[in-house]
Image (tube, rainbow, N blue to C red; front, side, top):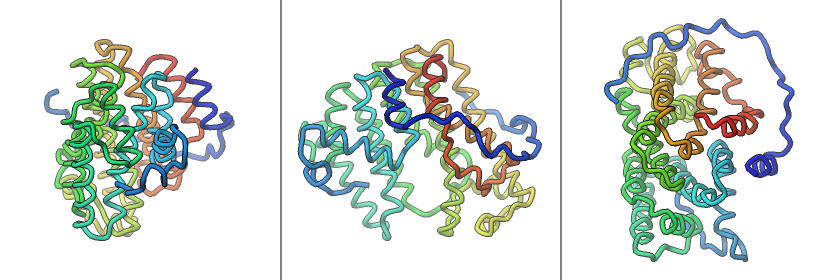
Length: 333
C-alpha cells in the first residue's frame, strides 16, 4: 500500500544514475567528532484555501507540505494510513512556523504571527480552532491522538526566539534549537503512531538534533545569498573563520574544517540514535525515516570534501523515494 501511495505521489522512479563524475577522496569518517554529554500563518479562510468539498483542509496541508517540505512529505506518505493525515497536519503546522522568519520584513510582524499560532493552539485545546486549514487539521490530529500541547508550544516558542538574525553562539545553542523544534516534532509524530516509549524518545532527540544541524548546513548557501550566516560562532572562531568568508564563498581549508566539524556532530547524533535500535519499538520506526535523507546529505558533503557551496548539494535526489521505501520495508532507521 505504501509503495502505491509513494509511487503515485512521486511518479515513476528513474533508476538511472547520472553525473557520476570524479570525486575528491573523502576524509576519514568523522574522526574528529566530539563526544556528546549524556544521553507562517497564511490568514486564508478554509474556503479560499481549499475550494469546496469536505476534503479541502487535508488537501491544503498535503500540498503545502509537498511544496515546502518535500522530504517530510515523502516520509509522511510512508506512515500507516490511519496516521498519515495527522502527520500531514503536524508537518504543515511546522512549515507555517518555519516560513514566518523569511516572509516578514519586520520582527514585530513575525511576533504577531507567532502570537496567532500560540492562540490557535490554545483554541485547539479548547475545541474552538480558527477557520484556517492547518489549524483545523491540527485540531483533528490533537483530538484523534491526544497530542501533548507542550511540544506544540515549544516549537512556537523556539521559532519565535529564532526570529532574530543572529548566528548561533555555539554548537550547543544550535542543538538546543533543534531539540525544541525538530525533536519536538518527532515526539508528536511518535504520539500519532501510538508510541510512548523512553528509548524511542531518546532516539527522537538525537535524530531531531541531527536534522537541525543538517538543515542549518543545507540553508547556508541560501542564507549567504541574503548576507546572513547562522553557523555556530564557536566553531568558526576555532578555525579562524569569519562570517565574511562564507559570504564570499571562500573555500580555504579552514572554512571546510568548520563544515566538517558541524557535519561530524550531525553524524554523531545519528550514530547515537541508532544505538537504541534494538530497544526502540518497531512501531516507532516510520517516525524516523528522515534519517535516510540526513545520511544522504552527509555522504554527499563528505564526497565533495565539505564544500558547502558545491552545486551537487543543491540537487534533488531522484532516488530518495525509492530509498525511503526500501528503508521502510526493511523496518530500519
